[in-house]
Image (tube, rainbow, N blue to C red; front, side):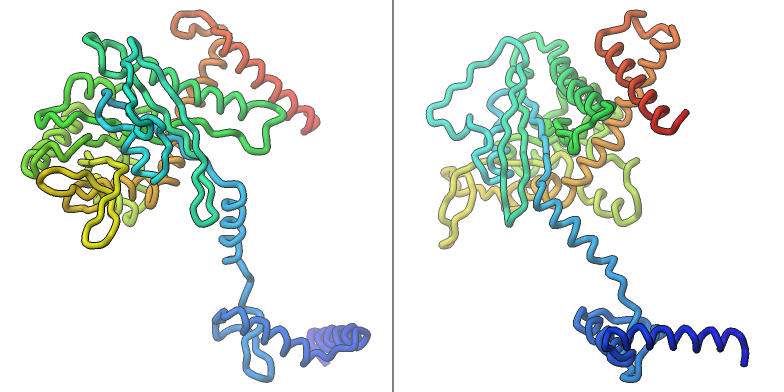
Length: 388
C-alpha cells in the first residue's frame, strides 16, 4: 500500500478513536456541522466538501461578523464630531445648527428675547451636547465665532480662528507622543467649518476670500448662503455661479476636495455635492401644520418656506453631507490630511531645533522644547524595549 494512503488511514483511525472516547460518531459530527452552517444561511461554493447528505461543510468562516463587532463597539463608545460655524452676527448660525441636529444645541436661538452683544474682537465659544439616536451616541461640539466680520476694520479677524484650530492639533499631538498614552485620545480637532456667506447676490467679499484662503489648508470648509429665502430663485442661481467662479479664480479648496476622491464611486458621489456648493440654506426651529403634517419652516405672508423641501432650499443637501453621507469622511480627511500635515511640520521644526537649525525667528518656543523632550522620551523607551 502507498505510504500517503497508509497515513490517511492512520489519521482517520485516530479521529475515530478520539470521537469514540467522546461517545460520538464521525458521520454525526459532520451532519451537525452541516446543519449549523445551514442555519447561518450561508451559501457555500460548489467546491466545498460535502457529507453524505450533500450539504456543504467547510465554506463559512465568519469574517462578516467583524462588522457587527465594530458596530457594537461604536454604539458602546460613541463618537465625537466637532463643527465650527463662522459668519457675521444675524446670519442664523445658531438656528441652523439647532435645525441640523434637531436639538437645542445652541442656546442663543432657544432663549426668548435674547439680544446678542457684538464683541470688540473675535471670541470663540464652544458648546458640547450629547445626541443619541437609535442607541448611537454622538458627542457634538459646536464652536461659534461671535465678533467675526462685525467690525469696521476686520483686518486679521481670522487669526483667533486659525490659532484655535492649530491649538486643537497641538493638543492631540501632545497626547499622541506621550509614553503613557490614554486608551482613547479625546478628539477636539475641528472636523468641519461651515462658512456663512451673506445673501448679497453679488460676489464674494474680500473678507470671504481672505478667510477661506487662509483656512482651506488646515480645515474642511463648507460654504453656505445664509438666509437664502431673501433671494429669488434666479438671484440665488446667479449668486451660486458667481461664488463658484470666485472659488476657482482664487484657488480656494472647499470640501469635498477633488484630489481626495479615492475611487470612481467616490468621485461620482462627490461631484453631485460639488454641483450644489455653496448650499443655499434656510434655518428655523419653528413647526407649522401643512396638509395635516408638522413641518419645519418659516412662515411669511406669501406662504411657508419648508426647510426640508428641496424645492425651497438646500438645507437637506447640507444635512446629508454633514451627517448622513460624509461625516466619517470629514473626520478621516481631518486626521489623515490636515492633522498629518500639521504633525509633520511640528516634528520637523522640533528636529530642526535639535540640530541647531534656524526655525523662522531662530527662537525655540516652550512648546517646541516640550515636544522635543517628549519625542526623545518615546525614542528612549522604544530603544530600551528593543534592547538597543
